Image (cartoon, rainbow, N blue to C red; front, top):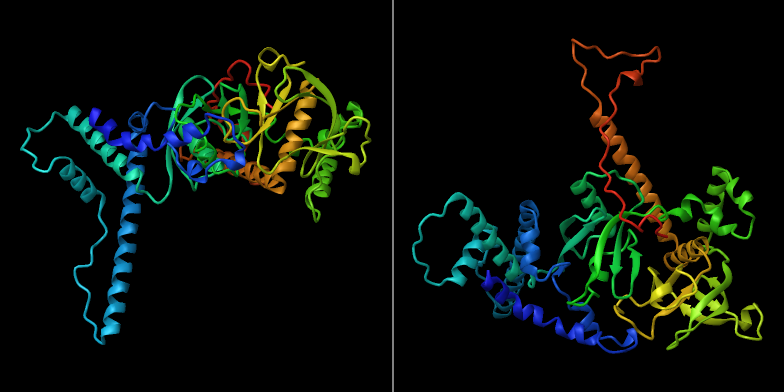
Length: 463
């Protein structure tokens, strides 16, 4: 297998620029656009060869089919361009002849033949391999071809290891056209878990001790491409009960100044009215959240309390000696180029007043930096208020569309699973009907319970 690694060494070498670019302090806006585009082709593995070996056979076949389709389409486009060029030349010379010998798209079997012939110009006859070795060799050949063609593909593709909450993992092939919603649907099929809207893909950064749930509309390849080659980051598939808490209980955020008893007594129709009033108008209304938070000052270990206010464009604070009027507010950070991350054990790591902290940073910052903004809340409830409200301020109505789609998806799949679990009627055991013509629910067997991976310690309180 050494030859496979050597084939890809030059491709991995191109990633050094990205690694080096994040090795020293720089403003995120100054990062090279070319560095942003350069990426490894696998996430969660030591090298691409290992990741391709982890792919299930049908996923590897799907990858090969995609790459074959890319090559065939490229060949067609080149042939069309060549044909158009010749026709133009013939038109200029005053005559035309029928085009011949136009190169046809190369099939997947031809690609395999070309790959084997390029690696061994004058192959010698070999003895037939035993069945087990033949299958292994066939997969090795596919991997060799995939290594050669991945870089040439029009669409960026990543082979990604996704960790399950029980410690196991699944390997997926993801391309730049797939959203997080698409990847979640793929994982539902692979894990046979339920289709709850609370399932999430989360990015874990061990160095910064941070976690962020990817939003369903995000294209997964984009944030993963910001990871460095030697990154210890992980992607985890887990349930996050607070993923769409904002839309399940909007009164918690829009009526946060009210007493808890009043908030708990809000009826469903009033919740719907709150969503309609704040999301269906000419402009989205962000919760008017404000209050004292602890701020970790730049380059210092101390935390100081400041009064912060949330606005649609960002977070603002009240300077010393000033009032909360708009003209006195100073901008702390804007949301257009940063993401929000929750943290783990910052009380010990950074001597924070509590462990209920969050940070705001550019997604390409993967290690400690002066451009990270640290904030700390008094309790978990306050942390949830700020984190979820900031998500709404940043993403706006698209977050609500994500929620609606997740609800529809869960409802559709649940209905389909229920219908497929109904037993077929047989002459020996006639189906019992009630007077209204509907099948008696007592006579229907309960569907088998869906497998839900257990929660790891500490993950149940994600915000």
